[in-house]
View 1 (cartoon, one colour):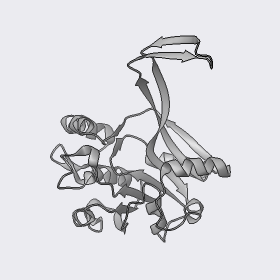
View 2 (cartoon, rainbow, N blue to C red):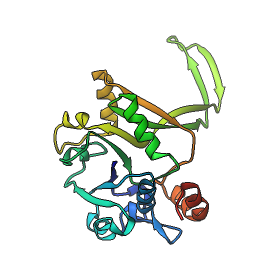
View 3 (tube, one colour):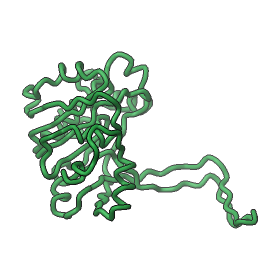
Length: 236
């Protein structure tokens, strides 16, 4: 099984931690980097070939992981020269298998990656998206009114539930082959174009543990709760 990890971002939201090192190499608990935990999880799920799509400070990531022998997997690299967003980097990889897993390099979750991949194969969809329900609280009184401006309803600080993308997908090679090479193309473009093309996109709800380490608060929480998190994620 093949996985591609998107590890080329600058990590601007996580500064100052990312001032000198790339976000995927930010350490947790003084033991593992974020990306190292993801690679170990994928290895434990049966993924033997992992491609790291790199850009910002790529030489540090490549020097740290090498060919992956230290972690018991095969690791190679795809280097993007410009900013290609989340899906554009996949167009640079010439040896994509028919189906593969793609994920962001700053996610901690206890998703069963093998089960997700196998569900994609059996669903006969061209794209599968792992989704997580987030509750968003509005800290204001919300007014709903008609076209004339007459009040129809009011809610004080309401909460809404949304299913959001977790940054973990399975994609068929045919989807990437349709895209222009080395052009900026994001997940949002992929979803909108898939709707327009009537592609089958499978949404896979997940209700386990998921943390997107994109902000200092999230990183500090993960670092402080490192031992509990690694047990939950199956990493020793």
